[in-house]
Image (cartoon, rainbow, N blue to C red; front, side, top):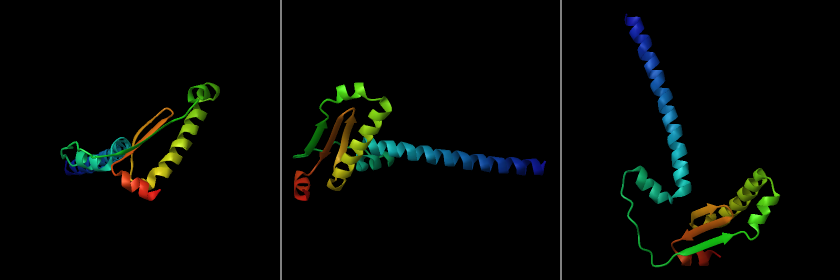
Length: 126
């Protein structure tokens, strides 16, 4: 009887370790998704159970771009090529704005939008 209990205990410990590992993996995926959708400081507050209070800003800078002729372009190119093209364009945009402490608000289809709280910081770095 004691041997059966010991085996059962070992099995439970393995199951708990496996489930804990799965939970950590899923949490990392959720955190990555949140970081892509929300500013980092908001993600931290949400993860710590703190309230997220809207803030009033005196001014902000917003950059919005859209690709001319994109609707016609997608009719002549295979879907995987469209996805690869958008990925390369938006990756280049992301690298370009990385040093400006901006928040990427949207990337939908051929549109790209970022915002920054402090306009002066952006201008001074140009």
